Image (tube, rainbow, N blue to C red; front, top):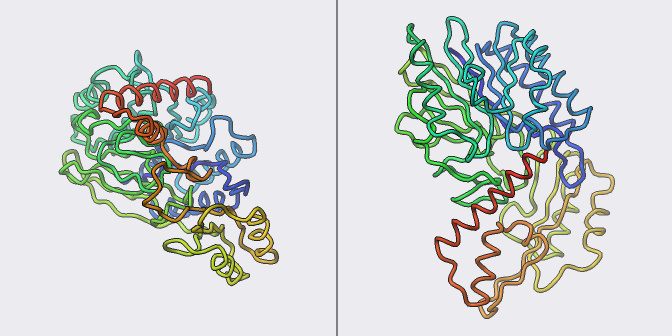
Length: 389
């Protein structure tokens, strides 16, 4: 079985009020071209299809047109599209019946009573166990293993078994996520890999934006990462993952195909920080004919000049690049007892880190039990937001 593994498209995402529709359309066109060339048996889209649970009509149309074009590139291919934590699980399934006419399976919600909804047989090729994002406390104990056992019973021909999940696995590299710690990334608590069961030949993961293998001892658990960057901190390459599995229990063959972004995200300077005057010169000297988004990394003593944003915006007049924002950081002062944050620094901090700083400031030791309680409350808040969506 040959699989194209992708996730985290985040259609509808805007970057500092700049529309990214052109880039996202280019990404969808490349997906169709790759399908036409590679002719996979299965196309896996593992969550965070949209950036918000309320995408505009134009963005929903972009997805529909894109999936139709991907289907037409290889009509025999099975397309499996699961919901992520950015998606609305209920809305994800509204058109699941007509989608079936194009061999598209839209899996938006966890079916605790009808497990068959999560098992997709690709005749003569293998089995897909498709599981959307769900709040961890809503997962019945042993849910993943139960599905894997069901497939094992019917897989008498020894066909490949692939499972999908949209979650945070402990030990993953969460580089690029502004709100990420070893405990939680993007408001999804990290779980042990063993919780996802045993018996799959390949585990196709979504949610983490940095493409990577997760250590399993078998080289068969992978985040494919975002096809185009969502933030300036995603400084790694962006791609889709191609997987080939001969039969059940065989090691998968895995490769990547890079996705080209017509509007790259550029940080000036490329490494470290620069004084404000130097950063302005770098922006002024940036080539006029290169379409890009620009972030300035600036080191300051106190605060930026009031007119800084306007100055930077004026410097790109007539250029094809788009200025986004100034990432201002104060010079390190070891004599400063209390940590003072700029607005950008405050927004980039994890809530738990702010809580720990406050506890230290008032003389409280933030122990492991307090950390667990804080993470539990944050998870409850995230769950409420998911249900409200």
